[in-house]
Length: 214
Image (cartoon, rainbow, N blue to C red):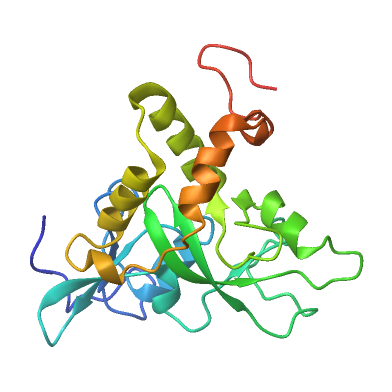
């Protein structure tokens, strides 16, 4: 792991900001140190990668969520085919969310689509591959990827929901683990997925290795 930033005084390729931001070890492969604006632009579709931002005063890398890099960073739902990222004009503001992913537990901001004939919020989350904790508890969703991962870990190694949750909290912050925000519904939803047919519907689009994907 790098404990210094030899590029802190260099200008990013965009010609504007300095190279002070990079991906954590489990993020993008060989992503170069860049400015925060370029990082956000490159991670529009990878919002759950951890950010390491160089603190020029403390001289250390500090882990952050993507939403902490800029007040304008938010996950816009329902506009995946827009060529340029922009907030939906039908919604006044974004909403704080706690999203559980395979890389850990992320505090982010989501903006729902408020356009005419837009799906309801539950459907928008499901379309974005985010599974709400409950119909009323939509601010703490889980990515389909983390549900699939727990399903396979439980099936293969018999890993329980509590232990899996603890591992996710350590992935998020291995020092101050108790401070990691987490929904108590996590230990309820994970076991439930093992006993009902939701995994079949959620993960039906995952291809089988060596088989045609349609």
